[in-house]
Image (tube, rainbow, N blue to C red; front, side):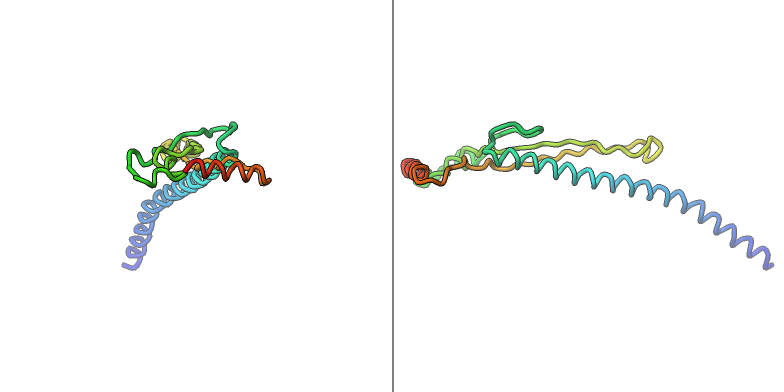
Length: 153
């Protein structure tokens, strides 16, 4: 009786192993894919931000790969009444120049056998408002800037 019981227990352990091992192999490959997906997403975010900021810091003038200048939608036709005469309000209502960078990447699984050749496409878009035009810090430039501000009101 004892020999049968031991054989039955060994058979149960074999069945558990046959069921559990493929599950753990699938989890192992899925974790590798998800970690590669995460690293690629972080890389696209970093590069997209870098390129958008690089263009924005030059007052949206110049060329940066994968970056362009667009106008934000703004607030549409909102009426600000008397506030509409203040500097900067027209920019907010009509839209502000923005440096945008869109970066795309594709993360495939390591081989066709893993995850049945599944792949994931990533897209990251970064919007950064353009920097103001640089103004020299000398007295004539400050007076010119003050005059433009006063006349703009």
